[in-house]
Image 1 (spheres, rainbow, N blue to C red):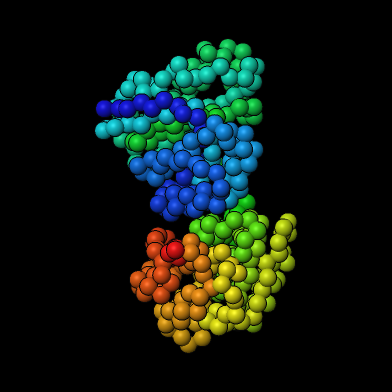
Image 2: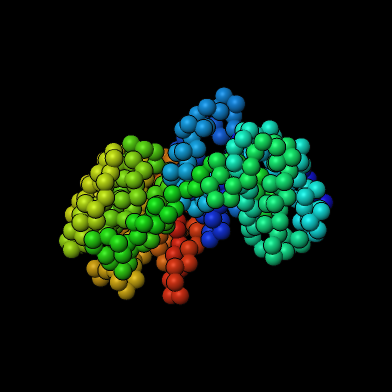
Length: 375
């Protein structure tokens, strides 16, 4: 059985499949930094988010909100204007005829005349039924292209350099069709990977995950972010790229010098990060000075906790920061999956928390923990 949903305006986003729950939470964290009321609908498999347009916000959606989102998100592949969607209830289509029948051709609108266009289809998840067919995406794209030409005979297909690009996402959960807007900046963020910086340390986190953690902090531009175990500066670099004021604290003289070298490599348009040589367990900060703490504390064979047990170090750290945090401030931290600290930390901070697991390599799975201070 299938249920068709009328297009309601707005946009849809294809989320990364590497950690769908984390991708949804990153997206919602970014949305929380906006003052505008925005309705989101998330597909059951956490792979597609539909952002519904409020009529009063239409102009700002196009000029401000969508560019802002696509600049920040890392666990999103692309964004498209939503022209049509269908959600499947029960099993997905079993035949190609069922698939095309689930698409209401009358929803293909009058498009810009004489413009060249292309249609691409993407299949996500673990497909069933006709969705398993080897060349399904090409066949479905040809079908939609033909229907667009019937409705708009002055248009022409151009697969190399089209003026307009339409995209369909197919999954067991449903079908989403729209006009492509933009890709996220994932490739740009990857270009800042640790091995390409002047100072490299093997414990450095990859920039995609560091940008994600900054986003989980739900920090607005012009607010302050603190990384009290800043290491070689990766989180500071990503925060500064987003226009967020940031300060990093590091206790190792060699590492903080390396962080300084890394920060010099990049141009920051609004605020350059600040570096402080100091101890994360002995902070001299007033309440309200920072809006979020985002950090990847030292662990593993390549990092040093200076003789402290990691859990003991972190519990001391949580005691130190509880007096500087305000309600709704966030603490985002990465720790090895076998470090059981969430419950004690939440009690110390008077916070709720969410935990996400991120596979790194054979011997390491990280936990990304987001604490939100209770009012």
